[in-house]
Amino acid sequence: MRKHAEYKMPGGKLVVVDIAIDQGQLRDVAISGDFFLEPDTALTAINSALNGQPLTASMAELAAAVARKLPDEVRMYGIDADAIAMVVRRAMDQAEQADGAGSGMAMEE
Picture 1 (spheres, rainbow, N blue to C red):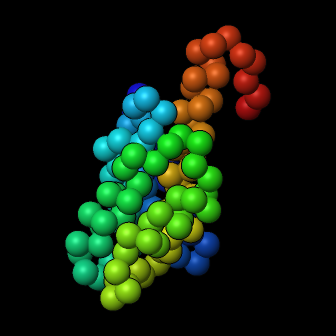
Picture 2: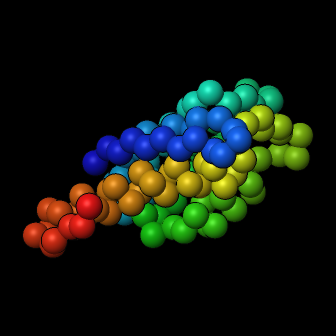
């Protein structure tokens, strides 16, 4: 199952994520948006930190995973680890809602 979500950080930039969910874990995580990172390799580290995270991971757990993977010299302009966690959690919530809809459970909009 593939999911897409977007989040505009207040006073910041747009963060976009495309993910696949496989066996309850994040796969093929691709973060993008109109933010800036230095060095550019930080994006690979962010995606790597999120790959394999369980669908049950909280925003705090996702943000901590991103922060742990980034070296001290990385600079993020217009986003932070919390904004990344927010957009990923939104995509994960869509996946959970889709699973609930498929099981015949009533969904609220």
